[in-house]
Image 1 (cartoon, rainbow, N blue to C red):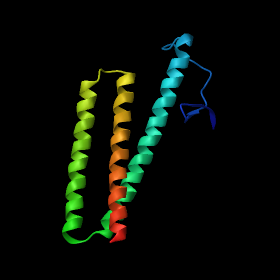
Image 2 (cartoon, one colour):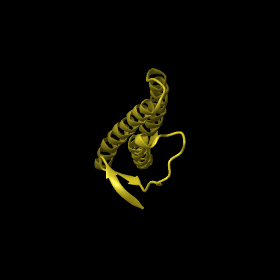
Image 3 (cartoon, rainbow, N blue to C red):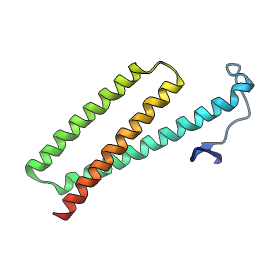
Length: 127
């Protein structure tokens, strides 16, 4: 299914056709862009899944006020995450590279939050 790797991310096999929209000399750049976008999309889904799994596990370990506080904190983080995404979309210029930058920042935020929740889960497991 994958024919080569770019920066450690698998790139799907590409068709050897090109559309009238892209000139043949642009093909390597377009192909690289698509591969990077696919990699970021895959990583975003993986980090989002890790975050959700860890959140549910942590939620299952907590009770009472601690559980309520986690729900409140996660809602606040989601609000921050969504507002950061909106801000970055407005800040960066329109275009393919801007889309990659916004997606990469989203991946970093998801990963950072998942890491934080994993640390909390580790503490909760020790209680």
